[in-house]
Image (cartoon, rainbow, N blue to C red; front, side, top):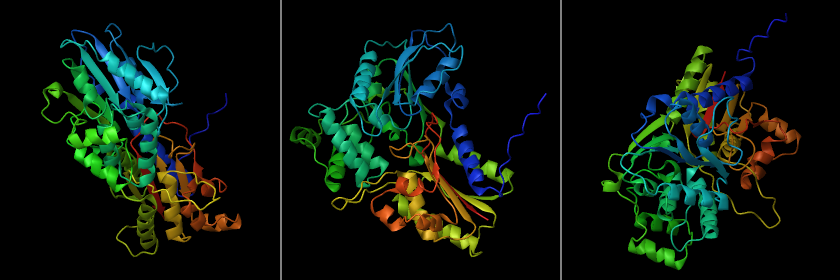
Length: 443
């Protein structure tokens, strides 16, 4: 008999593998199967309808199917991102339909799914239970434009918001008021049934009204605020829609709305929980740990520069952080897409990659510092990578290949910078989403 090879224990001898280990621990903590059972309500007198949207939707649906009593009725529809449905466990019968659609820009499949979900909410009674499974990405996956807005309009507005540098709260304020299903409208449509929402947070502060634009949560934002955001970022909407915003005709259900009375919302996974799990794993390896925050926002490259300043001062013995240490943070940064010069190649990348560009540039090849930044859903922006790695020789290796970091920053091209170095972090879809994960190792 051949003796099994013991798993490799992460160590400072391989900093990149150690950082990847911490990322994997953070993702594992946020998987739906590990977090759903404690928050499931008992089966109702009537039927149970499962509705949901988000990048973790497929995994959340499977978790419910595995935990729900086999003899209790269960049906429903959940929409997730293309290629984000996990393999079905052997012997687990499918009782919830899962369909796929586009993210981060909505498409016709997402529109059809939203229409079907809203249709399923009709005819419910007070004896029925609606179990809503909501996770990040639901804003684009659950797309149902308001009256006067076409899917093409919605796609354009979404692209402009994504490229504007607007933070997630601003983007989702607009999305709620231009939707016929978000901002509490789905829950209102389910009345008088009991509604219980299980959600995975991908937003700073875990504001459930912002996650996936809060389809089952009362919305305190206003049409006036949505208009102000559109003006601030110079995003146009059709005149008829603008008139509805100005008149308040597109207002969302507000706190105190009787249709939303008694709705329960449970956070089953959060960014802080994942950072805490990674911190525990790092301490187990003998590292000092600093958790900055799970709510960091701002321009990705600028956040990278701040992390670099902390890492440099630590590496040089000028901070209160004792080496060897790992600096952890989460949140949702933004990328403002720079205008391209005529004929300039379009950049590729997302928030994590742009953070790494800013970090690497500011570190300037500082010895003893490694870093990993990646999105916990496994996809950085719209590319096939989760993020990227930075090493002490990143700049030197790039220069040897003729890559100039300033050029890549100018066109938001993190992918084009880190791919030739072999430093993209590629995981495939993780089937969860608690947003950005960043770890900077200083030895």
